[in-house]
Image (cartoon, rainbow, N blue to C red; front, side, top):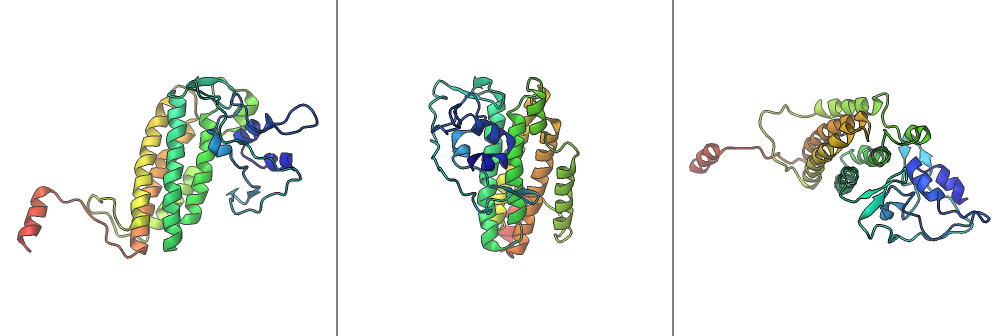
Length: 268
């Protein structure tokens, strides 16, 4: 049954997990070998549930397993300052690839926090944010599989938004939210309640993730579609932040220069 669950997991995770089976009767070992795992161990602490709909839902019921084994969070294989890509190649942990992977992981964490606030506010954004988090995992698989050196099979498994439909989807989401928002006439400061402020943080981290991904794309490691998606994602997060503020009934704070602030103070 464990193999059945692995079959529904994202390809980089599935490949990494395949190494835990020994040649004798397919018995699982107690950890993943770093030579095959492109992901940080905590990402592998539990398997992804089956695919439901357009993206992997964390609310899907777990698949029953006859022999459940825990996989250790730590492997000790990175203690010397290197980590492995999906291809098995080991690189220093400060390599451009791991900078890009780490920043997209950080982005997902910030989106996760924003999603919790959005759920509390019931503003209708949480489902889309959850899908984005799943897509960021797919982006990680693309970054962790150098396009210039990986096998054709691995390249096929880690392609991302080849037809551009995911970027088009973001643009559709942006346009629908923007229709309900007042036009922008001033620079907006991150504000507007907890959900809005958290989305603004995610937006700024997304911009940094894009900057980290650009040199990886230029070196032929990741697909250009990854950078394009992150570019559009920051626009979506900005619009979603404004929408969250509106749904919460909060007034967005706007930029005022020193003279404007002084004039307002004198008028009090």
